[in-house]
Image (tube, rainbow, N blue to C red; front, top):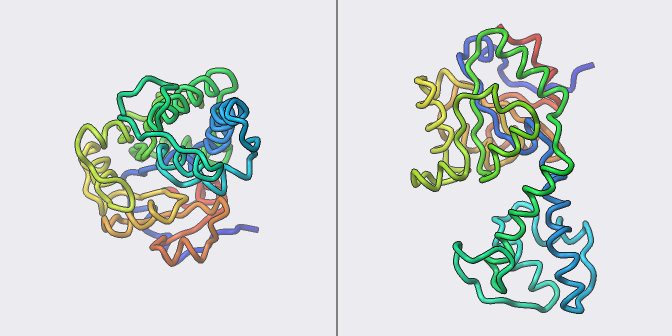
Length: 248
């Protein structure tokens, strides 16, 4: 029995391209982020004599925030503070940016040591879409998108990647603004109406809606189907392999 919630699935057949978010859509990258934050803060808080770091801290203070905001919030939860510093601070420098940059290094180390695998259903859908002749791109706010795709073994599937690094270099506002998705479509030489946005987060679904894309697919990894529909999704599935039969 399918878990698909749909308003209009017919436009999937007519589309020419699929624009995928990365974290939570193609790969369960949140697990890697959680382990990286633990690698950063477990020894740091111990050295500061503060309460130990737990997984609950990730959800309470870090999840969904830009990296430096997560650092600042976690420190505040322990009554600690550091000067902000600058984005150029050395990893581990005694600043918010220094810790944030160290976390980025821990994320890369975690990827190298333990890897990340794509969701099986997403991989099956991606493969079927490419075989059916769809263009594909990744549109992610992550600055680690290239490394995640390499670790997951699917980097070679994508010619077009619009990630946090490219957005910063080109001055593109992040989601929920539609600009990164619009850039992905443009790099494929297509209009938004010819493209499908595939997202698991409210902000990404809103970006697809506000960019007037041909179809917005929500992947419910726990946000809730109705919530994604309310944010602008046309279709909501629990797993992307549910939509393989709907491909042209």
